[in-house]
Amino acid sequence: MQTQNQPAFGADMAARYDSSRVKLQPLKDALHLQMQALFSALPQNARILCAGAGTGDELLFLAEVFPKWQFTLVDPADAMLARCQEKAQARGISQRCEFFTGFVHDLPEHAAFDAATSVLVAHFIHSPDARLAYFKDIAKRLKHGAMLVNAELSWNRQDSSFTTISQHWVALHKLAGLNINPSYLGDQVVVDAPSDISQLLASAGFSSPTLFYQALLIHAWYSKLTGIQP
Image 1 (cartoon, rainbow, N blue to C red):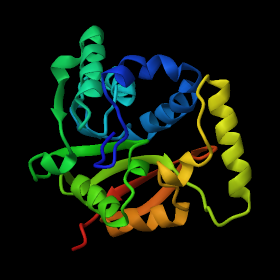
Image 2 (image 1 turned 180 degrees about the vertical axis):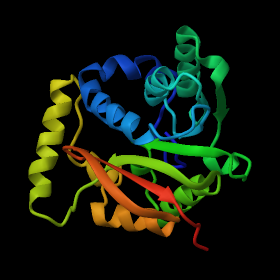
Image 3 (image 1 turned 90 degrees about the horizontal axis):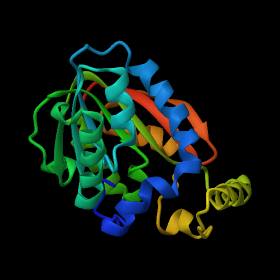
């Protein structure tokens, strides 16, 4: 994941990450299908920045449906990125990929990318200032008008429904064979209100963030870069 506050995404986690989440994959499949529609107007040879690429879920999908796209995949967890590279090589798409171990702010600062993805990444960044800096770092590397798809956990924690939705979230993971504690939400991952995330994206220079996908706590927005605010 693309964050200074990352949990332990080491070799053991990388080896079992995909297999441990097979039953949750339909949630991502639905998100990826909608991303395909959103990105369909991009150039045939578009360059895509995948921030917090992990083991490469969105890479494998997007590279298949857009066979001329080029990808830069960034993640500070080298074991996760190595797994991503292995999968890309197995699919024969590694020649269209650049794998960068580090953070978005470590990349050269120039408007090189036609679009960016940040999928289930930003909720690992706890500091509000760091969250804003993360999206500004993405913005600095996009062309004017480029699209960002950001997906992260989100809910209004002050709403009485948060307790119930948290229980559903835990139950969903239990069905998938994963045990998580409700305290994980808020302690280990940020769960900001959807309105706060929309404002955050706008503050980073992305216009009219639009919520287009929700699956329990997972929310996803698309927006376009119109100008980075100081």
